[in-house]
Amino acid sequence: MSFSAFLAFPGQGSQHQYMLSKGGILDLALSSEYSHALECCSDLISHDVFKLIEEGPEELINKTSITQPILILCSYLHFKKLVNSIDISPIYLAGHSLGEYSALVAANSISITEALKLVRKRGELMESAPYGSMSAIMGLDDDHIDEICLIASQGNNSHVQCANLNSPNQTVISGHDDAVVRAQDLCIAKGARAIKLKVSIASHSKLMLSAADEFQKTLESITFKMPEINIIHNVSVSSSTSSKDIPSLLVKQLHSPVRWVETCNFISTLNLPIIECGPGKVLSGLSKANKLENYFSVSDEEFYEKIISYG
Image (cartoon, rainbow, N blue to C red; front, top):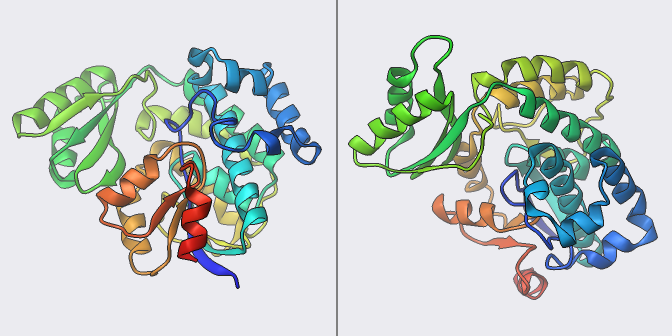
């Protein structure tokens, strides 16, 4: 008997070396059925994707324009293993930032090769955007952080904003480095904790506007089908009613906040198990932080035993 679930796909930051072998998807990756996806990914990044993931170097794995396609590839393989291993019916899908592309593949809106090409270009454009930084703020609500970001932003060349609304206790800010530092210091003065992220890309901020304009041209070459499974989009926290809406949502996503708290609030109304479908356990941590229950990660070594017992 099939059971229903909410599938969540992770974004950048969940990648790690050995995510094929340690993720239990090595056999799938090496099978003839999925060799086309590996070959496509290897061609796009100009590296043997299998060797890169399993042997490194880590600095290449963590390079945005490489991270994005290899993470999409691994999440796709996890999804295929999941639906081929157990009788499961995903009712809703969502992805944290980059993970939204994995959701589109899982919903048969675009093919895996189309997704790989899109996110390779997305990563390249993000790398070419103005230099910036990001910081995770803990212990201060997003309304206060939003006000602080307005104070810390000084003109067009010193902007910071809320980028990832991850949980009631964690908001990531993003923008020009000097503005991020000012906002971070003001948040700390209000009693918050802050961790400067090891990135030079200001994701989900106005610094991505030029990249978003360029990316729109790339999206015009792709024909999106209406998703066969409802996808909760980052920008709208709702499902699109037309496939024609998807490109504009993906463009806006580049420079708009990831509204994950609201996504989790929606999930809480569904009474469905949540399955994190991809490398790492970042979204499981955010599920816990958002007080959700019955969440699972396919990266858990005991995942299949746990989910079969649950089902």
